[in-house]
Length: 386
Image 1 (tube, one colour):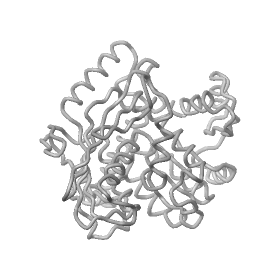
Image 2 (tube, rainbow, N blue to C red):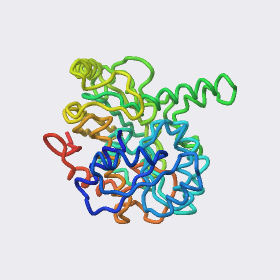
Image 3 (tube, rainbow, N blue to C red):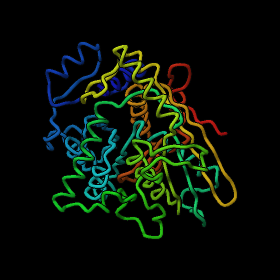
Image 4 (tube, rainbow, N blue to C red):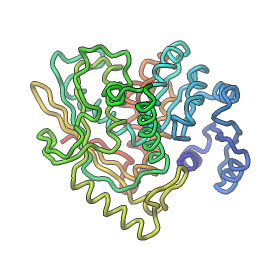
């Protein structure tokens, strides 16, 4: 479903762009292309067929992987990109997949120069770019870490949307994989709860967070954002991705936590329920299923990001337009793909590795590209300093 939205976005806005689609079923690809009048070639390539994926990835500059859960279907795709020296971005929200990708492909991507960008959608672009903006305004430059601890708190204050089928499947796969690992003895619970699971290379002196989300597991009041909230449901992914950004950018001892206000949670549930009554959404969607056009158009979110140093506090409000799981995410990952295709948009062109949006791309360039994309009533995403 998201793949179709990405292709439709490219066809409408970049008709001369050289892209192709790929999937395991040639007949489904043919049907999708013809029914949507998409002017792109397509190739059959199963996610289990590494030689086919290597051949495919060697013929392109950027590979966008949209088929999850990534723990089940994504390993060969990202390996093909890393080995081919092809830039890559996905929508993965699975921290075990992230850890395995780092362990197996960091050295490979460094050798080929491939930038492997994990979590390039609603998870975790708004939170990652927002954190980097806050650090910039606090005077923390890449490679020049702060001498003292800096705290960053992100709070989702509004959300209109629902879980995508892929996100739901990824969450289930993450929990299932953790339970299986603990039961079999191959995974320690401490390892599963490690805030730095995506950073096997991190030094102990940089381990300033002790819990995965940074927020904690329960409802509480946070004085930094002045709100009562709970951990954001995707904070278990986002927080670990963003800590990898801090590490890659050599920004020192930065603590990160992410929550969702109670008010936002209540309003989000009520809004989604009304959409369900109108037949716009399935409460438990399957991978590949998505909401109606009205819900995708009218959805959106707001996030408050606050950074605190010894000397000052910096606050940003991030406004996103379009249902986070589909409309917003499809346009965001498409924009990240375009940024990756332009050497001037990359950070440290020629340097590869398993990276994040915040560490692998130039934030200013990407923000400008995103703000040029139109959502319902304004730019797809805006960053406002308060």
